[in-house]
Image 1 (cartoon, rainbow, N blue to C red):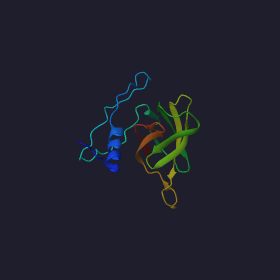
Image 2: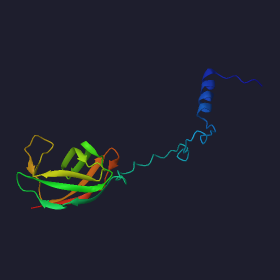
Image 3: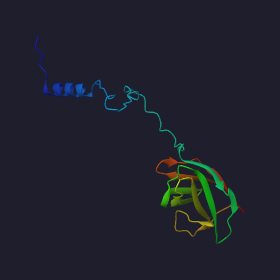
Image 4: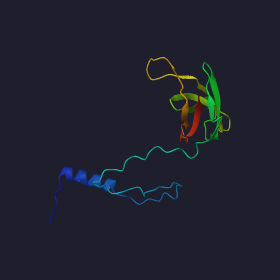
Length: 158
């Protein structure tokens, strides 16, 4: 019996063979390959993406002070202690205190302390004039290239 194959059948067969798993010895090259994530296609939809989780290396341990009144026409300096902050000046850290987002915030040389100021007024997304920072608890977190820290609450007093 003679097999006659059309050009499209040869191309299809070539594609299937190219996708076949070829045994390899990556141990000799010092490379670790994890094939455990390879799965067969299924008719089910993929799982939803995992929620953003704080980076374990980037961590806030305390705020000093952890509460303060912010008098009109002034600022309050706050020290963030923790680990994993991007050291150096100019800073590569982003500090968020509720609606306030501060970019390019420097950290000390060891990446364990950040000093920032809380203003008495915050600007909105529009061209509206700045409004007072209202009393209440605001989450503080730090973002770097490594990820997002845990959040700790800072309380603005009346």
